[in-house]
Amino acid sequence: MSPPASPLVLASGSPRRAELIARLGLAPAAIDPADIDETPLKGELPAPYAARMAAAKAAVVAARHAGVAVLGADTVVAAGRRILPKAENAEEARACLELLSGRRHRVHSAITLIDGEGRARHRLSTSIVRFKRLAAAEIDAYLAGGDWRGKAGGYAIQGYAESWVAMLQGSHSGVMGLPLYETRALLGAAGLLPSHGDA
Ligand SMILES: Cc1cn([C@H]2C[C@H](O)[C@@H](COP(=O)(O)OP(=O)(O)OP(=O)(O)O)O2)c(=O)[nH]c1=O
Image 1 (cartoon, rainbow, N blue to C red):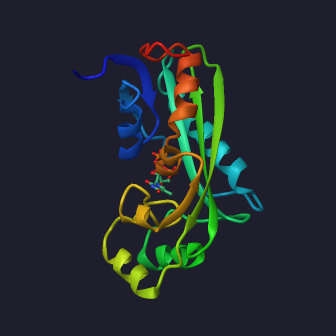
Image 2 (cartoon, rainbow, N blue to C red):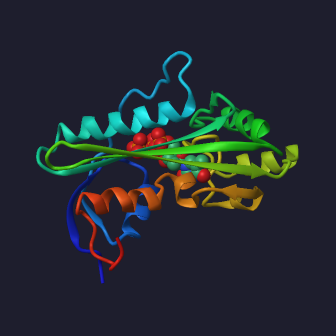
């Protein structure tokens, strides 16, 4: 049975986010990516940057859909205070993976829900991930595939890179792009979830 339609717009072009929200039994009425400028501010720290992006994506899309709830999200991979890019080419992805090899990093996934009355609610999920040490040949083999393209930090946990994860503390769905614990809480508080008998 397909999930019931709901008055929710997903402000994201990420297929992972559409897939993750479907797990909550929701089929967004529309998918409308925000396409905003995602350049970090000078000296901006990773978590506030993720929160600012999620809020901006939701706000831009809410302005296009009056009276309907809108969900925006943003996922940032951070090495210390450094915001890693969404890898657009193999060299960028290689630089990220060399940095992440054998070390712990943080993944911040922020979400903003703007309800039909224009009230915004925000949540942030932060996970700690530790990769095994990656040999140059492993990075080369990974780059030969396309999994890294457009992904924050140059990897996708939902693919082969999951086998590099020696430790994950936090939210697997958050690392993928939409933290389901926080998303369920926000949608539930706004009365947008099909009932599963839980609160
Ligand atoms: C770390 C990691 C990131 N990602 C993805 C999630 C996001 O799509 C992307 C981070 O970029 P985002 O800017 O969060 O999202 P996006 O540009 O893909 O989509 P939109 O702005 O329209 O919502 O990296 C994974 O799919 N798996 C991972 O393990």
